Length: 183
Image (cartoon, rainbow, N blue to C red; front, top):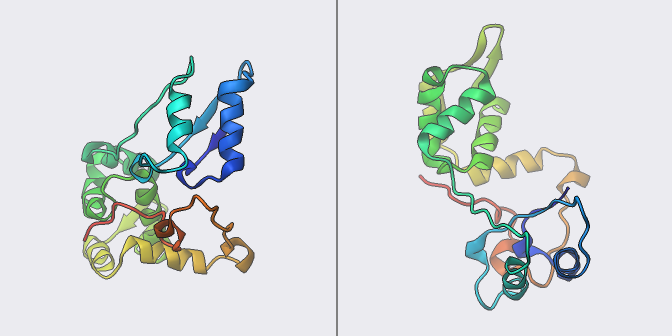
């Protein structure tokens, strides 16, 4: 299996690799998964033509993944915290306006709550004070939380690869990968 994320920002090499695997060289048993943000790829985008060609290849399936609905977010949080859905529902409902059901952002926000001591692991399970969660969320934006976590990483881990020429200018900022944040 090969997984390529954020294809909308990919340069010629990864796009050429996918093109080769899908159009020229078939490899039995290869599962090639590519992920992209469709809203970032318009007709003028360098990926538009290859995407159209790839979709026409035999055996290629396109799956569109949407953000999780509220009940699924509750289930995900319950599974992550090893708690009953009824127990975590208020927590999931409190963070949902900040993540809009985006699984990645939900995980990152829970990690930030834990990292900053608002969500704590105890011998009896995960604990949180609903008022403290609301206060934390009221004073933060998920993008800011993610940036703070990145700045806490070692310098070498903070360095990102340089954007390719096909990277849109809006995606070149440090928080460009964070979408769907509500007040």
